[in-house]
Image 1 (tube, rainbow, N blue to C red):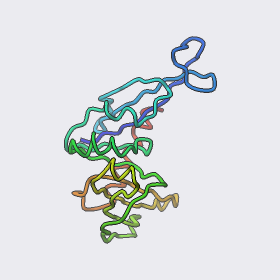
Image 2 (cartoon, rainbow, N blue to C red; image 1 turned 120 degrees about the horizontal axis):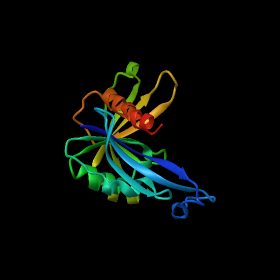
Image 3 (cartoon, rainbow, N blue to C red; image 1 turned 45 degrees about the horizontal axis):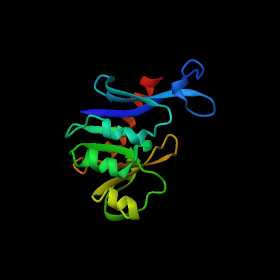
Image 4 (cartoon, helix red, strand yellow; image 1 turned 135 degrees about the horizontal axis):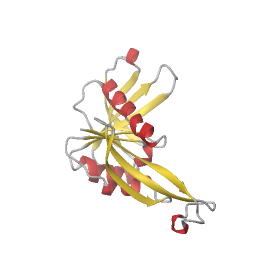
Length: 181
């Protein structure tokens, strides 16, 4: 099972919906959606006030052991990734934040012609983040040759041997963006 999880902000007229106060005199709510990518079918939808941070709803997501959850970096909340995904034996793929502090424990050889620049086992080394996610993670760095953009993917899956598959999995997350459009 492969799921994409994301949210979309739905703007509302604040005069008609005063309960939906968002910011700068605008109204909105968020629709947090978990989509089964086999058929682009939402399997879980949660509506929250527009001000709610995306990571705050991760504890509400129905998590299945062995399934993959593809999320953007708005969901990088290490305590929740550990508690609601790692400990439930589900897999996540997300993008690493630029300010993430970590140490490299192992580097695996990669085929740079595929776009994969590195495949490493890491451990968070920041004071708080290392306590919130005490286990190791995999960091796959990938360059999209078409755009020249470099992506850093975090996952707790070490079983997939080819690191390019991690980048390709994350690319599938785009289906939820198309759903929102």
